[in-house]
Length: 122
Length: 275
Ligand SMILES: Nc1ncnc2c1ncn2[C@@H]1O[C@H](COP(=O)(O)OP(=O)(O)OP(=O)(O)O)[C@@H](O)[C@H]1O
Ligand SMILES: [Mg+2]
Image 1 (cartoon, helix red, strand yellow):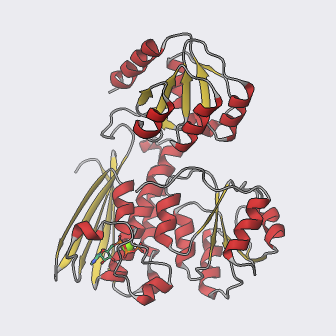
Image 2 (spheres, rainbow over the protein chains, first blue to last red; image 1 turned 90 degrees about the vertical axis):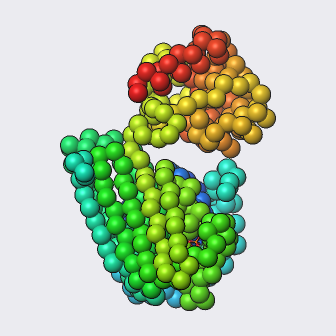
Image 3 (cartoon, rainbow over the protein chains, first blue to last red; image 1 turned 30 degrees about the vertical axis):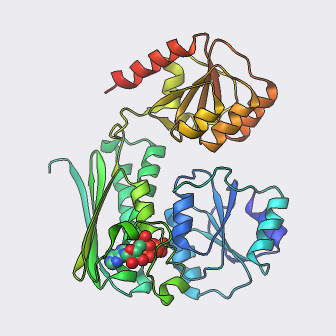
């Protein structure tokens, strides 16, 4: 799924546009705990969309380390200027939707975006 | 050590949430640059993988010093064969290491939790991702963590091989459409079995699967186990539907005339011989 489609589906605004708009997002992943994100996405090679309510620069750093090209902030949360600045530097597209995480995921899933199909093992 | 290529070290301060992750990002960038130099001739995908693994582990280690300790450093040494990182701190130490390694156990502060930390997954994550993990802590004094991410041919399991090479060497007939990336995936061992439930419960993740079965359920199992390639033996022909589903999940299905016994033997020797 292309970034422009995602924007359309969840009626998102672009907070930071520097980045790879050609990327084809394969999976969606929603979490507010960064270590959970790191744990689950650590072996994912396909481009992932991170859906989260975390708005501080850590979310961008997490995305960078995991090669996540696009972060979608849910619940229309206000976001720190430093986060946007860092995303620009690191080439990570930042989007924001006013929908809550559950609805955001639901809309994207309905539109064909999938989650990783395997079960998590500890 | 003579094969040391790069040494990087950064001080990390407790409670310094604003800069949490900066050291990791800097190390990550330097590693990428160093690995890009021709002398190391790392493959692009392998290179990305080890940098990503190191990045994740470093980030968790750095976060732990910021969140839980007073002061420390993280140090990364790039050798020809592996990336070794050390995170050492002066701080409260860890009273119970087994508890600290338990997924979900966390003593992170309210502040850290507000920022998205405190899942209690950090140490477990490093343990899972790294190829070597060593943690020691003196309660009341500090913590020392060492982890390694290994480059090609240095996993405990033996030799690693690209699927591209495997297909070539075993003269397999590939039945699914694939991408370059699928061929770049790496396998290091195989599991030969025709019982799906056995594969589900016993096979390692990401293994090569050798089977005489070719029905669609095979693909379901392979997806769950993240198996990148299924070798169908004795010239069995999967249905169109099976191939489609495999392609959808980036799984390669390849066929051989040989029996499971013969192809297993060949692959076994191949993975051994290289060493
Ligand atoms: N460097 C350290 N110094 C003191 N205690 C630590 C240190 N690292 C980890 N711990 C202890 O071990 C626990 C588990 O650590 P772990 O990294 O797994 O989770 P976390 O840091 O609490 O949360 P997360 O990493 O998921 O954000 C911590 O909550 C803390 O009690
Ligand atoms: Mg941690």
